[in-house]
Length: 294
Image (cartoon, rainbow, N blue to C red; front, side):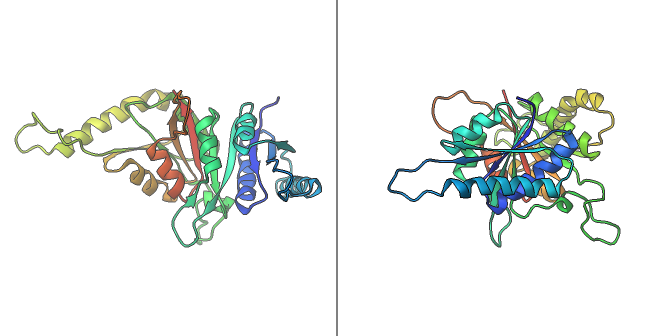
């Protein structure tokens, strides 16, 4: 099957926002969009939506997307089965899987449901989670008058990087996204100060200062070959002590996209996405890309 940007569609406001984001990304990548609606069969005594209404949902969503994003090829399909299994299957031949996430009313952030978390944990394709209400203008800088605009430059892309196990796949994804947007890439590394750190330091030296220098040097070392590979991408490095999730959430407030890695864990049971990834998925206010790596 040809390469696509695939969207999990359920008719909700968040899945519509995900479809719109996918269409904008498809324009940057020059790829088509595929909408996938999964219908989970229910036992006979339980009420199930009629086939016609399901077909209408998919058809109307595809037509709306074509009108809103002319020039982007859009296809749609229905699948019967469990949502997690079908979405994971749909992601296998996709460049990217895009899912919607319900906004937390009155609170900062959004809520990733059990299906979304399970799909993220089980697929090796990059997954982008988009909150309800996300607009094209949110990803761009305001115009000179301070008005939101989709015609201005993109806000930066933010990458959360574990310098101990950086993973080439998240790095490549983040640099490519910054290049496509002609945007700066802000690379953030954070971590708590280990209780034993500081032994052997010279008198008067502060452990936090020494650790910061070491981490900054390591971050620069990891990024050096990527800077050379993407000379046109402006890179801003930040390495500080503190909660990695908090550092990322702070950095992503003015970002167009937040990219985090997820280590692939070959375990027979359970869904594992990592504590930092889990935190940013539930509290970031911008689209979050989760990129699996070994």
